[in-house]
Length: 605
Image (cartoon, rainbow, N blue to C red; front, side, top):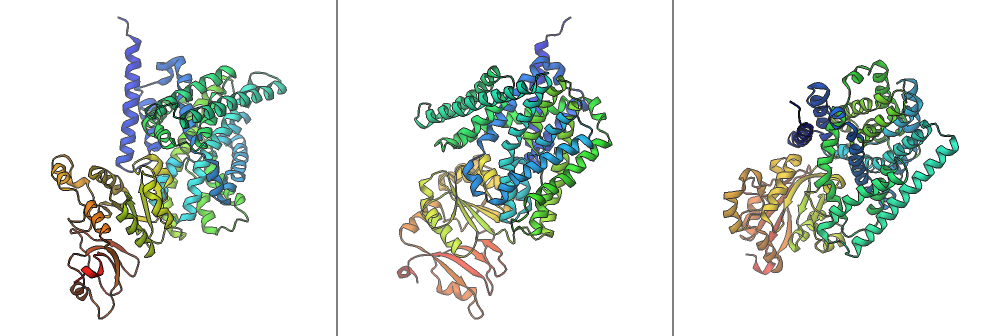
């Protein structure tokens, strides 16, 4: 009886998807780096348990499938690189992304050849790949460590910029040795590389420009923009490969960089492409890549491989950072922290997975070791750097002095005035809203703002929340407030996420549909709904600060204050912040500052 091969293929696809998404959920549930669980899951179901063998089950389909998946990942990485942000990031990031990249590539290549025993072509490619420090791995570490703004900004922007830059360099190196390995003369190699660059640039930049113009002229409806973008990435990849062998990945990167720098009105929708599609692709490709590692190859990772990985972590990165930051005026503590923290991420493994097999086919010595080495480097750096960044930043005095800042989700007349008053009290504050016009007054008043969706991955990557410790959800959508509080409770703690009281109808419905444990603490009292606060703003209610000193206690203050006044928050002398709620009422003492919301003077009793 013959076995239908489609059954095996179906089981393979289902297992990869289920394992990948399960690993993603576990990473979210236990607040672990997703890339760590992806890699471990792939090694478990592949070389470990032998449940899947991508090389055998996909056969000739494996290489083109990986190429398509990596093209989407590189497109997204290219789209995140915005040239104006590179200028704004400052000289530190510029040095790390230029001189730091060159030094890492040079020293890493030499170490890979002389210590790791890799052939020069594979060693040079290894040196290019280790440049990448992924933002998806860096950002959770920064939130965990609560770094001060400057070192956090340096690490974040280095990861964002080096992601596409390192991938671009790796693609160029790969293509150079691919042509060289085909036996072509040097002139043919250089002409082939130039042709690949020309084909990639014309299709990537030209196609991205035309697509961006079509989006800005509303030639594509909103609901089709993300699908059209995905189709364009795959078409660009395929056409570039047809025009010049192996030019597709370069073209996809150029396409992303072009769209990301065209100031598209729909750029937020395009970023959601990663959230809706790339989550599935990234989890799938990691499981496939690590599951496809031959267990025999793992046994070839000997002392030379261990010495190479140790050099990359303990020597190559520190040397690159220390040399590239000379003369920048950075304190030694910042340089030391930057020298240590450099976790590798998604792009590094994806690029290595595609190029390793193709260089192996060309007969380059050591190509089979490339993917196991990069996967090992990812696991080592994620575990080592993730477990030590908090301790090291505190020892170096680079952790934020306090985390008493407040994120206000939902801009309204009242919440904007509240944010301005908080800022005047020297409390860090950020107000977020998906409506651009809603944030105008906040921007004019110098309040930090975020325009976009707080539950999006873009917010997770781009926001610097190292000085934030509280969240207050004030949107008109009660269910959305619950979701936001539930999301940020994992970062700030359940007792530090607040939301305004629900409307009467929503409160009744909530008891049937939303678990009370998932919502935030009700701030300010049961009457402080969004509608009521807006009504009081319209009737000229004012924010009032009161400092308690010896002889003027909180009890005396209550006797002179309006009975309708709402208690907002309390700031202690040591900077500790408390937001008022019935569950956790305020208890001011001498030296504290109380912020209240009071009716106009003529209404005070």
